[in-house]
Image 1 (cartoon, rainbow, N blue to C red):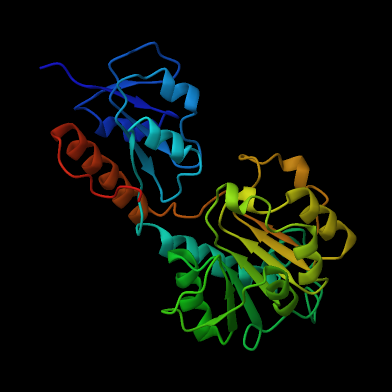
Image 2 (image 1 turned 90 degrees about the horizontal axis):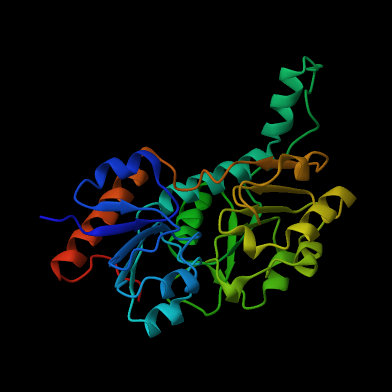
Length: 302
């Protein structure tokens, strides 16, 4: 029996070993018989790529994000989309908490002092900030935001959040004005979805409101933050610090951050745990099996 052609974009390395039931095709291609594609949500397929695949019926995404796709156009073309919701949000929240602690307790500066043999007692780095009693503002109270809040509360943070609408089931205080949330917060953690509606919502005005003693942490998408404004504020001392796991362009150029102080930077570690990657791969494989069998998809995007 002929294996069905499957577009994998971008190439997914060792994961493709698990696609033995399909004929894996990479872009660019002139194949007209491709009915399904696998992608990473923030990479996606352009409308032009979709147009070049007249028989495309499903796009299966790793991860919960689908910001690399034009959802309206996919709907117009009757292309179903699946994603990996409720798989890696706990892991992303772990990274957020790690970045918050790293910035408040100066882990990055401490390691640098130790490695450069500059540890001078009694304090290797200036006095740090206690977590308990700090004000944590969370932007986006979906699965990741709620997981951040659940972790932060036992540390003694006072928690307030912002999103496009109030959620009655969330017990934490809601703030409808993002600027006011930033003005109130000691730490602003970004967990909003990355799409056109959130592009650069963390702009110079929000960063200025967070202030010279504030810390910005982003585990969402790089597009949510005006990165140029962020870097300028950090260099000028108008923002106290930043912990970033996501960037405007990935991989981000190392030179861009060479002289940017008070930062802890990680290379989009997010949901990259063994457990989440395994569950995500099984989600992708199950959605593919269901699509080609004509069954109901496991995790369709609403």
